[in-house]
Structures are given as C-alpha cells and as structure tokens.
Length: 107
Image 1 (cartoon, rainbow, N blue to C red):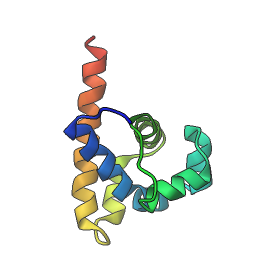
Image 2 (image 1 turned 90 degrees about the vertical axis):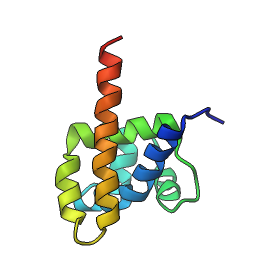
Image 3 (image 1 turned 180 degrees about the horizontal axis):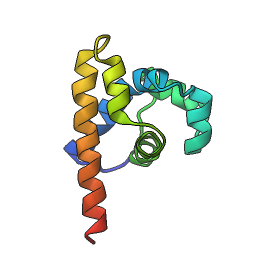
Image 4 (image 1 turned 30 degrees about the vertical axis):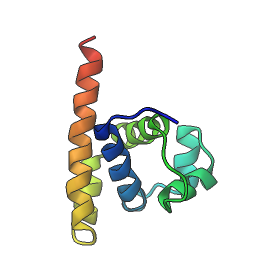
C-alpha cells in the first residue's frame, strides 16, 4: 500500500467523488478515460463506485488528463447547480495540482 500524506488522500478522495460528474459534463466516457490513462474501463468504474481505491499514480494520470485535455473550471461550472459540494472540492483540487506542478518545476 502506498504511504500517502493526508493532503494526497484528500486530493484522491476529491477526484474520486468528482470524477463521474466531471467526466460526464466534459463528454469523456469511462472507456476513453481508461484508454488515455492506461487503465481498464472496469477499473475506472470500480474507482467511481468506491469499490477500488485510487492509487496516487492513477490519480496523477487522471487529473493530468483532465488538466491537459479539458478545463477543470469548465467542468466545475457545468456541475455547479447539480453538485455544489463537488465544485468547491474540484476547484481546490485544481489549486492543489498547481501547487504540485510548481513544486516539481522548482527542483
């Protein structure tokens, strides 16, 4: 099992909760997402249903797919009326990922 920080666990939890909404609002099927991030569609389904925990490596692959191919803010605005709690978490996740990207560039 991975040794994750509390911040990483929160980020994974946020993406796990937001992923089905974000994916659907941005028009990305489980099959397409799975293909792009090197996972099976079944694994994406298990993660979205909370039946399989997401690893940090899987998290990074998925979040960078969304950041590079779509817009978190666009997806967040689209789901705002349906899932307001997810929107706030999603925007915090984007902020956290920007932090990790900047930290990686400064090394």
